[in-house]
Amino acid sequence: MASVLHPSEPLTPPQEHTKTHYIAAPGGFRKHLPDLTTERFRRASSQNANSYSAYFNERHAPPWLFDLTQTWARLYTKPFYGITTDGTRQSDLFQHENSGIDPHPIVKAADRLLSLLSPVEQSALLYSIDAREWRAWSNPEVLLRPFGLRLENIAAEASDAVLAVVEATLSPEGYAKALAAMRINAFLGELCGMQSIMNARSYNFLVFGTPSATEPWGWSLYGHHLCLSVFLWGSQIVVSPTFTGAEPTCIDEGLFAGTTILGEEGAFGLQLMQSLNEAERATAQTYKLLKDPQMRRTGDLETDQWNPDDQRCLCGAFRDNRIVPYEGICVSELNYEQRALLLELAQHFLLYLPAEARRRRLRQIEEHFDETFFSWIGNYGNDDSFYYRVQSPVIILEFDHHSGVFLNNTKPAKFHVHTIVRTPNGGDYGWALQERDI
Image (cartoon, rainbow, N blue to C red; front, side, top):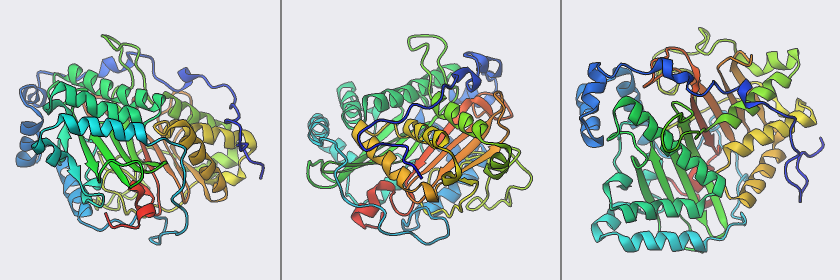
């Protein structure tokens, strides 16, 4: 099988794609704006993150989300093993090696952050390298686990210093993607009158270990529609798991009008599916409907294939040990151009990684193409909503269109997207590099 990547060359440019074939028209979400006079939004408008969370836990509202959080709580207590296809973790997939990053600017930014914090704040921020809190991230706007420091609750200079750590760690385009997710979260807060719950600083930040240019350490940032787990060890970086979402996927007014997110991931996924011939599409399409009657929906939220929060995504928050069998079509059956499309798709999921680390990660993915599967749920016309997954021993990428949570569309729409990156077989959180239980 010919390599798509040359050792010293960038990705082969894929065939042209048109974003408008994928993305809904800007402002299309506005016909689904919620009624802010309802009790839900009137109450939320007077709450902050803590009182909103307390109400959620006391009233179990909404019940479908509360029930899922109870499942999450049980999963959180279980020792970390890693996502697998059959319950057995493959070994010798990940080694401590050079990812091509310079750790010194990241450490400098982290040290400056620490210098701005009080002893109490430092104590709240810092965790041991093997702390279970690595796995405490979650996507809902409800603050389920208030670990670390919340950016909106600390001095502006310290909050800016947190973002400086994020900026020093990620690629410039990856940092821009993270800012876009945070700004769109703030835009949603404005649309719903919930600015004190959803804003650009409604995120928690944790540091694991001691920032060092030679020893392992890392950080976690989590909140609504943006969750990043970053492990660092010298010149090596692991950014996994990540959760990036948006409702809506664009800002159409105000200071940040024109901000969009997650368009390329959707466009390249759709282009790849449409490029398959009829037999290949039949193999890739595991379910024809986004909420297909054949999906397992028994009420067991640990194993069901669909629930109101995750919807079709299988590898979201607290799913660190999930068994996810391979489905769909093996990438080794695809032609050169289709495999190039898949790598371009993966590149956008992995945008948080610095350029050289991303190139090496893409090469690792390509080396496992004989064990990589592309699966699809839903239809694949230009106007259709859909889900897809790319899965191999070294990567899981999930893309899903969702129905409304704050907007009132009852069916999945292109203006509400969730994406997930996982490193199976113990690779999440850099665990396989440390051989620790977290």
